[in-house]
Length: 160
Image (cartoon, rainbow, N blue to C red):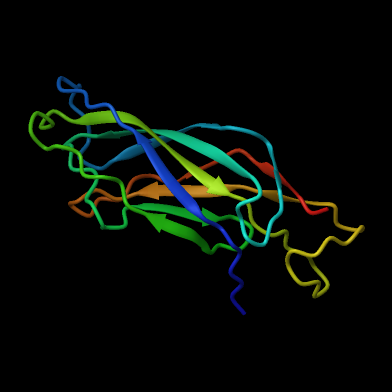
């Protein structure tokens, strides 16, 4: 049975183009930078609490981003299910032939705790006051090249 968890993503990007980048692979590469806090309060509607995830990227042929095309993938490591996929805004190709690099930051709203023993998600059982949550992140460029997958640091999801 697949569970859906009230995750909502809001993508805010901070991109910088490097016009004279060193010779870099055409396959994008990403590195985890930070997560804005280490706890989240669970919420079935998701808008109660949020955090910001940031990572660096590098792409040798500069073909990242395409409006309305899903190319940033976020997975919940507790379930293996998608948080939702996002679209990186188009980056100008002109001058990017030597590659681009920059930073992407996006906001994640809260979700529900998951419990063993058949307890429904989003409950507040005293026996399970918290969950641990981490995310896998991967991007894909316009040529279809997929980056490496990075994992965020763990966040404590407060269930009560």
